[in-house]
Length: 167
Length: 145
Image (cartoon, rainbow over all chains, first blue to last red; front, top):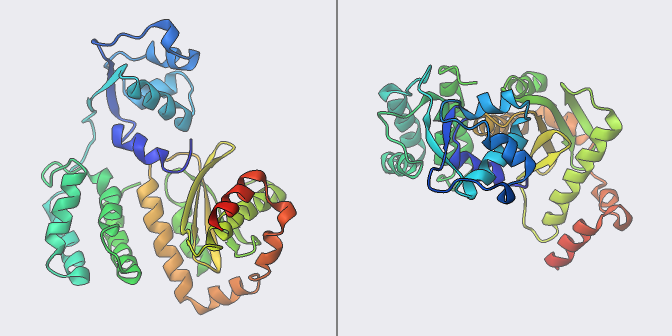
């Protein structure tokens, strides 16, 4: 894989907890798949997530994700949903803090910037998961053009993140 | 102080090793990897060369991500030094990038740390000697002219 690929993969599979199923409208044919892809697709049952499948095949994460991504690009698998077990929501308190920090740095436009970024990530404040907070911070950082201000924002938000016990 | 900041990076899930290298590829700090120093120096010099090659055209590169052996490598540069992370997993990439950026900020502001790094800086011309560049790098540089 090359630079940038991981972000593309993570857009399709935000975490390894996503459940996947075979696309019923495009069943795989033996000739269209490599042996590694075939090995993976035989494990796809709509009940196990990416991590479960990679573990069962003893697949290293980067390699496994690459295969899943290729299968998705070939429209052979579909993302069903993310497993909800143990998921935690960031919560309104987090967004109030985020706004407070960003307003200090870029002014009142901060609220619009945050909303735009959340929308671009295909998320909502109400359902925003805790483990996606770093991605949100990084995306918001990308909207701050001044290097020093961006650094200050990241520094303050890193302290906030620590309170959320994100690994 | 520098070690405390670098430990924050090491504590992130998936991080298996970390190098802080000067602008000529000299390893100033090494954490958490058992790989031989020679092998790590090869990696650090390769990354410094990529950064330097882009720098020839004033296209400063601050971040490089590549696959090297079984690792995903993330390198973030701050001119005089570069932090190179060896990741075994890419699950916490955003958190990692934010943390490294903040750590670089801390190091830049800390006179003691910078004094230590500056002892090893300079001589980047040696890194860019023609015979040490591979075909891909030569092609990259030729595009910049």
